[in-house]
Length: 290
Image (cartoon, rainbow, N blue to C red; front, side, top):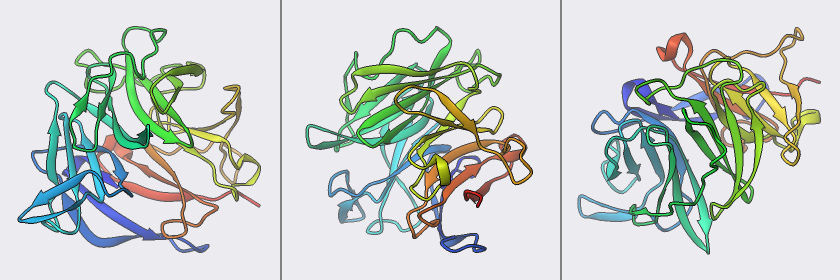
C-alpha cells in the first residue's frame, strides 16, 4: 500500500477467511525525497534491476510519486528504504501500471500535471511515445488520474484538474474512462461523465463476487462510490450497495484490488482509502452478499 501522507509503503496480508481482517506485515518502506507515493506495482519479472550497496536484483515493488519520481524496492538492498530510479520535472504522478509490449515489460505512469501517460522501459528510462495512450476527445482541463492494466487492455481514468494541475476537482460528472491496447492504441471511450466523480480505482471483480463477477469495478475518489460496468458496452450495470440497501460510500476511496488468497480471499475485493480529507488511512475488503 502507498502511504502518501507519510512517504512510506506498508505491506498487508491475511483476510483470507470470513471474519479475518487484513493484517499489516511488520515492514515499512520509506520513499525518499518526500516522494508522496500514489501508484504501486508488483514486479514479477527479472527486469527492472536495482544495484544498491553492492547488491543487484530485480525490483519487487515500484512506486510512482506526486513529485515526479519513480522509486523501487527489493530485499537485496536497504531493507527499509526504496531507491530513486527516475525523475521527471514539473510532474505529478497519480498512478502506475505495468504492461507488456512486444514481449517486454514497461511501466505506465499517469502524469496528471502534464496531461499524459509516461512510458518507461525496464531500465527505468522514459520512452517517447507521443501518440500512445492519447484520446484527443478528452476536454481541456482533464488529465490522466490513474492507469490500470486489466487483462489485455489498459484503462485510463481522467479527473478534472485544479488550477495548479496538482489535485483533482471532485464533482458529479467529473471524469472519463478510456480503453487502450497494451501498445497504446486508443480503442474506445468507455465512460463519459455521468456517474463518475474523480474515478481512480479500477479492477475486474473476481469469479466469486456474486452476479458482478468478471465485470469492471470503477471507484470514485470524489464521492466514494463504486460502479459496476460492462467492459464492452460501457453500460453502468449497478452501484455497489451496503447491507441496508443504500449505495456503498467509502470516504476518500482510492485503490481496488481482487484478493489473491494471500491478501484477501479469492472472492474478495480489497480497497484502500484516505478518509477525513486524506488525513487518515483505511484498508478493508468487500464481499458479495449472500
